[in-house]
Length: 365
Image (tube, rainbow, N blue to C red; front, side, top):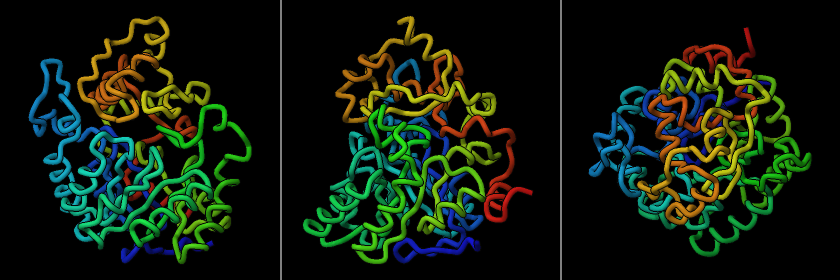
């Protein structure tokens, strides 16, 4: 099967591959810029931009190097610089921003990303019913929600059309093998009927009821054969996150890459998260510390996501997600939280973005 270009809104993407948005500091300027340069779609994560370049764009950083409050854990200044740097790499190729709906200041982050030059906004971690309102001043920016079921897409389209007079420009359907936060409850992630190959076709059919909306398959897509399989099920493109960690240009700390490279199938697990959804990552010393109640103190310095209720959920699960993701960004193996998709254990080399995209497009060589 030929892997063809596709469009999201008015933007043409030459290769039907979207690089998943990965915060804190996994997909920023270098990764996203180079993915877009190679004709796929690079995605900058807005999560934790206050950590960029050793927190120098955060207005208030505490003595333990933690950005204080939501508008410092997320830095609009840093986000703009990340986009500027990515643009130097990819020029006018399409470039997207992934913004968690659970973010404390979601609407403002959307506006900042649009102003910084994002051609598209991708949003998951909750059903983004208010997404069009947040981007209202930027009608040229394409909106791409992430859903896990056809029902969720139907609810979202009805609401958007009724309240905002518009529909998604594309939709990502994400199965429960993805890295990071899932769209299903813990037990539901293992049900056969919730796997990507089962939930994709109903979403494709639902999308047809709302016009010519491309559907992008995500969660466990690993190689060329997986891409072809998703296309045969009706997808226009795929989204892949974990494989891009294994690239030279990935913004992640070298220690982060080595944690994923050293992972085994049996130590990639669904973990409890303060966000309220299960999240997939590598079992490390952090989980042992949580079980032994010796994990770092939870102080809710950053106030990063609304569902955590200022550290209430963090205390319930035993760790602060902002602090632990920031530690992973800093390469602190003992206290970092290292997200990966279920296939992360298959990662066995670090190659260039160009080499990876070439492999994905034509098959392994």
